[in-house]
Length: 134
Image (cartoon, rainbow, N blue to C red; front, side, top):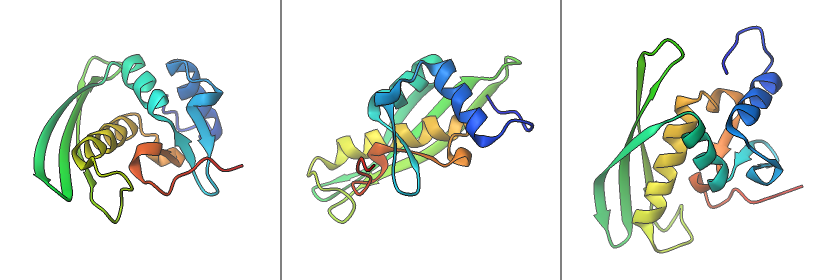
C-alpha cells in the first residue's frame, strides 16, 4: 500500500480496495477518517495480521491490554508491532472496560501495521467521542 509517490488519498483508496472495504466500513469525522469495527477486521483478515493479546491490568474501573501484531511484508519479512489499548470511566461510556480495551488495542495494532495512522485514519473503538458526523 505505501508508496512515496502516491498521495494520501491514493494510498487510502489502495488500502480500501486491497481490503475490500465498503462505504459502511468508513466514515468521516470532522477532522479524521474513521474505520469501523468491521473495517478493522476486514483489514486484519486481508493483510493476514496475527494479533496476540495480553492483559496488563484489569480492575473494576480500568483495563489495559497489550496487543502484539505480526504480519509478513511483500518480501516475506515479518513485521512486529506492539501497542496498548485502555478503557476507564473518563474515556469509555460502557462499563465493560476489558472488552473495550481489547477492541482499542486491536484497532491500534492493525492501523499501525498498515501505516493507516500516517494517512489520518483512526478506529471507531479508540474513543467514545468519535461519532458518525456528516
